[in-house]
Amino acid sequence: MKSFSERMPRLGTENAFSVINKAKKFEREVLAPKGEKLIYLQIGEPGFDTPKNINDAAVKAIEKNMTHYTPTAGIPELREAVAEYSSRNACVNYEPEDVVVVPGGKPVMFYMLNALIDPGDEVIIPSPGYPIYGSVTEYLGGKVVPIALREENDFNFTSDDLKKAITKKTKVIILNTPQNPTGGVFTKKLIEEIAELAIKHDLWVLSDEIYDRIVHEGEHFSITNIEGMPERTVLLNGCSKTYAMTGYRIGWAVTKNAEMAKYIEQLACNDVSCTNTMTQFAALEAITGPQGSIEEMRTEYKKRRDLMVELVHGIPGMHCKSPKGAFYLMVNVKEILDKLEISAGKLCDRIMEEAHVLILPGTCFGHFGENFVRFSYVSTEANIKDGLAKIKKFIETIYK
Ligand SMILES: Cc1ncc(COP(=O)(O)O)c(C=O)c1O
Picture 1 (cartoon, rainbow, N blue to C red):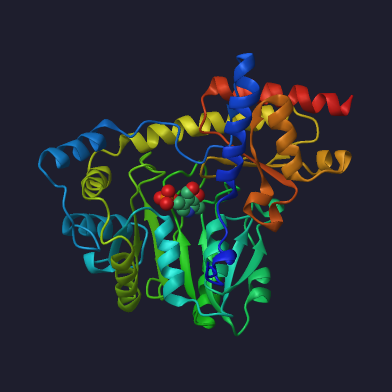
Picture 2: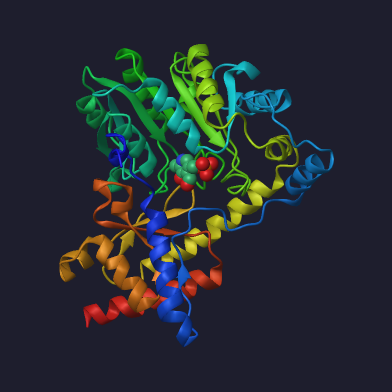
């Protein structure tokens, strides 16, 4: 058999998925025979059903036989609605032609980086950060340049770190605010400094704002609100997190750079032809219909966040900042790791095997996550209380 392409081994993955597969196997083979279950506190998706008006719109689209191809960049009414939706945070009015609708937020990363990266080009990536940014960069032969999100700065990076990271080969800076996995929200000041550097060094920005409606303290500030940025920025957003629509698969790229929009559309045409048609009608209802569910979900997440932060602080060796956005909690476990002389990955394995709770090691999100574990607080209050009590009991045995 002839060999696979030389770029294939460079493609990474979301390790969270392999952790879940391992956990499901453990639950099936070890816990189920004893009538026991795992508590899943690693989940990266909304803990709510999709609002009914959105599901109804999808059903109606099927009933009306909206089951054929659409234009690659999306149905005109959705592109128009997304343009308006994206303009609320921007210094420009986006037009429908600035929008390319794609199946989720993830394809935006893949298409934008494909449009830009040649071997040797450098991409600056927050660390710990969403693993797909680095995976796709390396797949394309680019070089990942991680910059640390600092716990002491509420998981912002510093503009000094960014200045040091920029070289002649830098092509793209990737931002993600509010952030996965830290829950950090970048300050307006930092975003302004990033914009200044991006303009000075003539860089592209991928601004992943998929959690923009889940902000518990302060306000979301988009880099597209700064003059000179919409032309060099691809704004990534979608319905997955805001409207609890992860399985629908819908997102969009928005940019004032016409050539970039054209290339993203062309890549999408080669890849998927178009985004699922009924999904597009559901998304149209999501962003133009009643918006009350967003605040209901956010209020509930905030309650669960506060509960989880309080319970984490009752566990020896664990401490965390109260995150301002998204639905993740990055917990510092350095003391426990040093005490046991193990990695965060091994600690999570032990928590799964001995406390029967699943959480993720910070290293799933890059090198700078090594002293952390990530909890998500989308689960029910009962699960959060039960899971944290089990972890506490396990950690206390270590401290005895
Ligand atoms: C930071 C970030 N960006 C993008 C995505 C992908 O979103 P989607 O499911 O719409 O592809 C996720 C999903 O977890 C995420 O955490």
